[in-house]
Length: 284
Ligand code: NDP
Image (tube, rainbow, N blue to C red):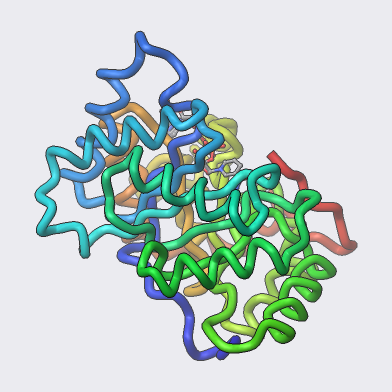
């Protein structure tokens, strides 16, 4: 079920995050315009969750998608997540149907368990398999799971048998949060499970980091672009920075074209050392 040579194919290495969108009526038009701008600029990977704005972020995406021709749905890769409190077999199915209805997108390309809750993995997994059979999700995965959780998840997959296994774990990963490099990334890499890096700009803090800005100036790019190029430096990691500002949306997408040199990577390792011991995963 987990073939290391079969990494999930994303349409691009940078996607658009949507956390904090859809929470305020006053920002609605501005946020719809931002997502529409991202689509026009070439973003094809969009990350959201039923949690964000209590469905509001999915409604923002739905409004932006109405301007995007239905015939082009296949170009997009839409990711959403079920809340752990909804992740029973029936609850997951209902949550997925509601997410699809809010976005009017017919199906999800990837559906994730947002973090581990009290429902047994087996329940969520059965729902994912049902949804997959009905064509409502193309792939499924998890978020914020560590190696011990993943081993349990994979065991639940083995017991249920048949069907594809999880394809992606969405994790907090940035220059200043490298904890997953210790054991989680290698574990996933060995099994062909993709990593989707959330908060790759450190929720904005890395975009104003003095040393990153200096490194960026040397090659005519921004601190944010250095941070993003670093996050996606290996083929099994994609990143989903969030912005509602058109200039930043363009800037972040362009980071996918940057390949950092060995010298630059060494400087970044000095500034933000790789982990030497296992750290617990932060869950947001
Ligand atoms: P990011 O690291 O993407 O940072 C977003 C912040 O940085 C915003 O304040 C944004 O402001 C600002 N920003 C974006 N681009 C630039 C730029 N080029 N220059 C300067 N500032 C910039 O943080 P997020 O926490 O939003 O993570 C990204 C996405 O990951 C989320 O939106 C969500 O989709 C997902 N996520 C998933 C989690 C999970 O548990 N699975 C947890 C957290 C996030 P502005 O909008 O004003 O540009």
